[in-house]
Amino acid sequence: MNVNYGGFVPISTVDWRGRSVCTVFLRGCPVHCHYCHNPNIQTGSDLRPVDEILDLIRSSRMLISGVIFSGGEPTMQKDALIALAEGCRAMGLKVGVQTNGVFPDTLEALIERSLIDLVHLDIKTRWEHYPKLLKVKPEVTIKVQRSLALCREAYLAGTLSEFQAVVTLFPGREDDVAYISREVPDVDFVLNQGVSGDITPLSFNELKGLADKIQRPVRIRTRDDGEVTYKNGQIIIADSFVLTDILQARRKY
Image (cartoon, rainbow, N blue to C red; front, top):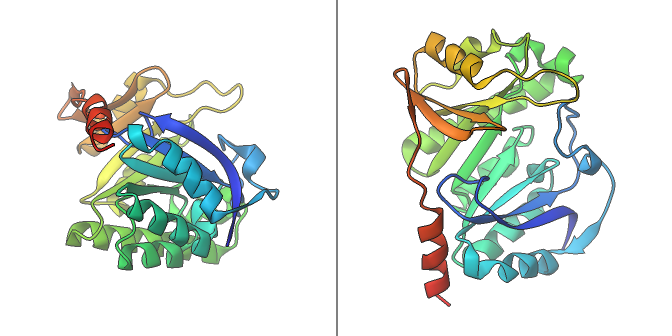
């Protein structure tokens, strides 16, 4: 089986909070966001055997405890992603996916087979704006809603260890926060600073102000400040377990 491969980061301490991981990028995505951080792998082909990608992951094994699959859109390649997740499980690694939620069947299969530990679901905007903003068919919105329901149900049932609903914010779209917050109760909610071209990004303080309005704990991610938890008007910088994570992984080998 082949994977449409997009790239590999052998070690990352920012893609999974509290863990050192490697990140595998899979090529191809049906949604073309103007702020995409990897536009060069939205299309094209670079087919590699699954075993070749697993060998890349294995080369980082001494320094990691998990793998993040990103893109592009990793769930677009259902069978290949399942095979990669099975290979990661055989190495004793945690598995996370960053996804736009357009392929709920892939997420459902990963959850049912206990092959996934973390889902970052990127919710682009309020539902009625999906077709116009992203230039997609209305049924795409229904698929994202199904992915949200699947992941939230699994998270609340304990069959998905970590689930984050992520909204990437740009000036002019601040009103989306309250709307999306109501759609994602009882899960980790992330306000992600949108960065694109010459657009001046929302500041950390502006994102804090949006969090104050919805009155719930959030994670705020910005380019300059990294990720912090903001709760009840206070900034909470979580203890980092990345170094411990690395040392524990090294002791196993």
